[in-house]
Amino acid sequence: MGRNRHGADPSGTGDDAGVDARFTALLEDSAEELYESAPCGYLSTMMDGTIARINATLLGWLGLDRADVVGRKRFADLLTVGGKLYHETHFAPLLRMRGEVGGVALEMRGADGGRLPVLVSSVVKYGTEGEPLLIRTTVFDASDRRSYEEELLRRRRDAEQAHAEAERARAEAERARAEAEQARAEAEEARSQAEADRSRLADALAVLQQSLVPASLPEVPGLETAVYYHTASADRLGGDFYDLFPLDGTRWAFFLGDVCGKGPEAASLTSLTRYTLRAAALHDPDPTAALTTLNAVLHERYAGGGDPRYCTVVFGVVEPGGDGSATVRLASGGHPPALVLRADGRADYLPTPGGLLVGILPTAPVGTVETTLAPGETLLLYTDGLTEARTGPARDQLFGDDALLAFGGAQAPASPQETVAALTTLLRGFGDGLDDDTALLALGVPALPPPARRPATDRPS
Amino acid sequence: MNPLNITLRDTAAGPVLHVAGELDYAHAATLRQQVDQLVLKPDQWLVIDLSGLEFCDSSGITALLAARQHAHTAGADIALAAVPAKTMRVLTIVGLDRIFTIRPAADTV
Image 1: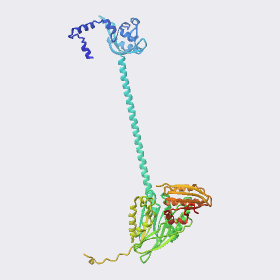
Image 2 (image 1 turned 120 degrees about the vertical axis):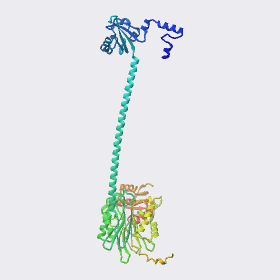
Image 3 (image 1 turned 120 degrees about the horizontal axis):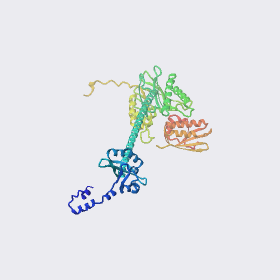
Image 4 (image 1 turned 180 degrees about the vertical axis):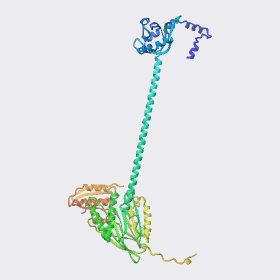
């Protein structure tokens, strides 16, 4: 734009005479032509608005004939209804008051009914006495400007809408965050509730477990005892059980066994078994009688319901003698045989043939055996968690009776504590192979004190 | 772990259940369900053929005892056939070798 102005300098100060001449010729362009074809509309009206003169440009914009306009219409007639109203109430009074009004946005109405947004400026021409003579008005086409403004408005509306949407999305996100927070809090609460439940259940299980096996064995005069209990699963109450208790001033009863199944049902069977044996032994200390009573109780309780429950158990009565030995009488109902570690280094099983699982028949045969424990000898009762511990990858690769017998032989002679300690180490070595509950109960007669030491002076220096 | 595979065969003397695989805590219930569905007539023999048995723990023993009870309730008899040596050892320890009728094979009487 600046270049154009420079190239056609209206001041006429250019050096080139030819350019000057052409420019002068342009300036001499007819003023009439300039008026009629100017890039804006011109009109002159009487003070009452009657149009006295109008240029071709404005007539062209409005699609009107000069003959229909000049002397026949007033400026206000060319406006839309809204424009006319604004003209009457604002434009005309302002013009009368000030003598000029500039750049007022109005809407004109074309012959075809179309609307033309325009910017209108008017000046009153006064006579020599200062009396108003006529009004000169220029009209600029504001369509582009209007659409620019509309575009601006539209953009602004879009921006506002986008902003509103962003705001809505933000609120949505905030709500989702709050919901997630609440869900997290609820999950946390549920977790801590579950934790509390679990802890309560663990406490209850521990208490129940205490009722199934004694926390510690009583001291037995003239005897040594040792126990070990391995629970395959902390959540599952054990199916193995043992006990040791006095019968009278000289005799003690003990038992060790294994109930079928796992979990709460097994625990309830264990409980029934333990307290039945205790009560039966106090009534009749004969081992066979105790197991016979237990069989009757379990059979009455469980058989016939289609869900047989039973246990295997060894029940014994031990009576320490005056000579430092102890007599042991055992009765077994389908339980693996007890093992004796002799003072001379041998280990023997004490078979109790003829015994049957306790609880499956109305009357069950019981196998019995009797032995004497000399000083330094130990009797070991165990459940099949020991002999059926897996020692290899195959499922049927088990520790077994022969290995236990050999292990006992290698340990003998050994006190109950030594025997149980050695077996505990052995069981730990099985790792995952020890997949069942395992109980060990050992009792024995203390070995005689070793011969008195020879005087220290006899030792080689 | 081999799953338990049980097949049923009817004979003139009564049904024969062939049990193959592992009769343990996880699978013993399957045998108990199969047995419970068997309809036995008085004096029939329910034969449990253990020739394919690879493992049997106390849950398996319980399932066999439940089968025995099911048979006796119907007035029928039960026999264990082709018991593997390891299972036979366990049955002997718990005294069940004298409670169950034991047969060398399913078709021997």
